[in-house]
Amino acid sequence: MKNKKKVLSAIQPTGDIHLGNYLGAVQNWVKLQENYDCTFGVVDYHAMTAPYKPSQLRQNTWKMVFQLLACGVKPEHLFIQSLIPEHTELNWILSCVTSYGETSRMTQFKDKMEQLKDKNKEALISMGLFSYPVLQAADILIYKADLVPVGKDQEQHLELTRNIAARFNYQFGKDFFPLPEPLFTEVPKVKSLADPTKKMSKSLGEKHYINMFGDLDRIRKQVRSAVTDTGEKTESMSPGVENLFTLLKVSGDSSTYESLMNDYKQGQLKYSELKNAVSEGLIELITPIKERYEAILSDKKQYKSIIKEASAQIRKGARQTLKEVKELTGLLSP
Image (tube, rainbow, N blue to C red):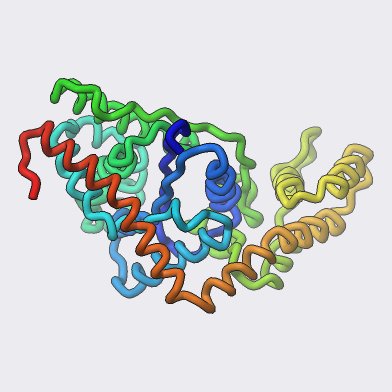
């Protein structure tokens, strides 16, 4: 691992992984493990920024761990954030070199704030929601990551992380933290089956996302009822049909994809055939992952022990980084 660049990425435990999560992030994590020194986290502290039930958070955290393992993430690369308290300690230190102006300009915070205001829920705008990009920076910097897989919507947060690292290095006179670079990878743009003008997302409601670990018959039903044409005559492929072809392509059946795409170009495409191919392709993709998940659930105690040990091993690096940070900043260590 010494010659491999360090990669850090994380995911909040907010229920089941859906197809958009898998294709946009998790599938990529699995591939990155082969060529990089990877550390992946289930960041349960981040899930506290809005009201929640403690028992549900704990349940969702383990569910996310088990599902990531089922998708192919190696246990030795995986940690649970709350098992490594150095994250939150570094968060405080970094917050003291972060300006209020930088944090207040985060577009995601402003968007969420406006959403809550529209619903007359200003009381739910917590300091955690405001400052979580600094904790996100701590998550990255505590492992001195070189690369962070991000989508365009997360680029601003990574830029903040780079600014915080650069300011820390300048203020304390040492090139201590590397400035992490974005790792952009080509990922399919998966849209909602119910509204293909919008990104597949849990926040839109159940009909807008495909649960990787849900009922297979429900997936068939969702695909059968997928929006295709809007009724407007256009020369280009409609968003709904394009989305179905994207899903067919990612399911791995290239011969069926080429055949149906040729039918489309010839003006002979039957939507029923396209939808049937998509549903069967997705089920073929999802079934082995679901089977691994069921096997993990049948031995939860063992897997919990494995991830706790993995978190303890990963924590050693976090503890060393924090010790060096304290030395640089004039703080005392036990």
